[in-house]
Image (cartoon, rainbow, N blue to C red):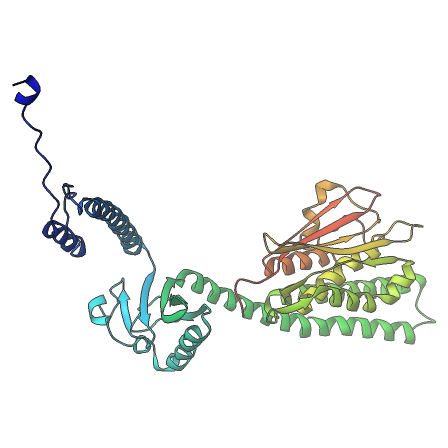
Length: 419
């Protein structure tokens, strides 16, 4: 017998059985932890390899899902917002916070509408129906109530989709109490400002009218007896009264930028600019000015204030012109699609100013030139800045003395807080 004949034969791997395959499939279906199946021999071995590979991929997917769920749960638990998830019938299926009258467990299955005061129910129902019909998002304020406590909340409603079907919605409540209290305080201040404006427009204007009226009577009745010095005094008195009246009017205009506002709407600045130039037609002809209108954007704004802004800027360009040089004024705009903002530019070839005054000129009562050279109270550009800021924008200027100035107003195309 040879050495080869004496060597023991290598044992063949046992065949993979149907029972082993079924056991692995059962553990996979039950999502039970398990080791990979031993791959034997026989016709079922390739199926065992395939099942082991599928099992490994399913286990990796389950691990990833568990990590994602843990991350979401951690995020929700640490969020300062109150979060609801509701089905299409507006029944609460999830709540992450305990509120004054309900725990999350107590809230499950209750109608969301029952959480609102009776006077708000129909409004909320209408918003939910719109969300479930259109798939759009909506936001509204919730004042303090028994259900939500002493805080003010901003409620943001968004649809839940399953494929192409809207199956429910989420409601996220953000505490805006501090913002709301500031807003209410601002409203009180505005009411006080309106009260001041009323006093300024009536009680303060009346003495000025009398000063001017009696000054005119004095000139008429005493024209022959009034000395040149006396006439000079009367002229100065009436001039001072006229300037005081103009100052009060400008102060009222400045205060009304905040107190006398209108809702934001779509405003075509090209149309507004043409209206402004029509209003200033006489001043433009008198100055021999050339005004060029280039492309201007459409944006969400207060149309009246946009007109006031443009009128002040173009009016300034006409006023601060160089002697003997016809004004050349350009009004144009550009849009940045990425930031969803536009820039309005009013540029002239007037007297200009030093760059160190570029910020100061936007303060109230700031004048770079004497009253004898150029009329005005120094409030026009302050009004422009206040209008820009009310719209979530800003205004700046660049200039070189003797070479003109450019005023650049940056504004958002859409207002975030819709009225």
